Amino acid sequence: MTLVILAAGMGSRYGGLKQIDPVTSDGEFIIDFSVYDAMINGFDKVVFVIKKENLDIFRETIGKRFENKIEVEYAFQELDDLPAGFAVPEGRVKPWGTAHALLAARTKVTDPFMVINADDFYGRNAYRSLAEHLGSLKEGDKPCYAMVGYVLENTLTENGTVARGICKVSDDGMLLEVTERTAIRPNGDIAVCKEGENEIEIPLNSIASMNCWGFTPDIFAYIEKGFSEFLSAEHADELKCEYYLPFAVCDMLSKGECDVKVYRSEDSWYGVTYKGDKDFVSKSIEALKANGTYPNVLAN
Image (tube, rainbow, N blue to C red):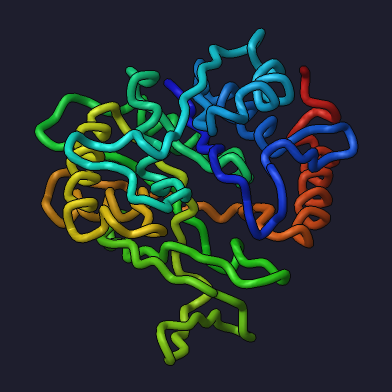
């Protein structure tokens, strides 16, 4: 099984290449814990999706830490990696989003795989759940993918607002839809977000998608087709529109092209969206070391 880590984003709100900013006193990165958890759950390859111009610093700082423990490859999210017939609009510099980032790994992945964000700490149960799901898959007429969903309350920050994909899940644990909500903030015993001029209430126990997915390689053909449709729908000339992975999956769901099993996690998700988040994340990970979840120093 392969772990695909989406690491092409520069983190404009954070201010810098946050994927290579240590979060522990021992100089460890969030990615170190992600790869560690993946390896102990049976993943034997990692593909980093990055910007080509970051290859040298990323390989020197991150990649070399794993090259003697797991197969490591790099894929590049490039602005002009577009379907035939489309061109980058003049003035566009922003990448095309997480589905486009995943598509960059299409030549590097040949077996069932897990997808995560580079700057998110998901907890070991996420890797265990998806490894078991991917390991149990059998040939079928329709792909059965998987997603780890987090309790919204466990994904919020006191340092600003966040965007989350709020999930609708069936009684038997299957994903029905994901609605992207932006500018979410806690407000007492609920969360709220803005939609136009209106403020919408969101229950704190809602299931949020944090871009933690389990797929088989057939997803790439669906994403390529969906990306072409996305660009055809008057998006090709826009400068900031993005093709998000949850959108691609939900489009497949709406067409009956796949099923998605949701594995609910009660773990706290940790992420460094804002500079002020780093101290909390660091203390939380150090606590996991102290209780024996992780060794004092991850082997380098």
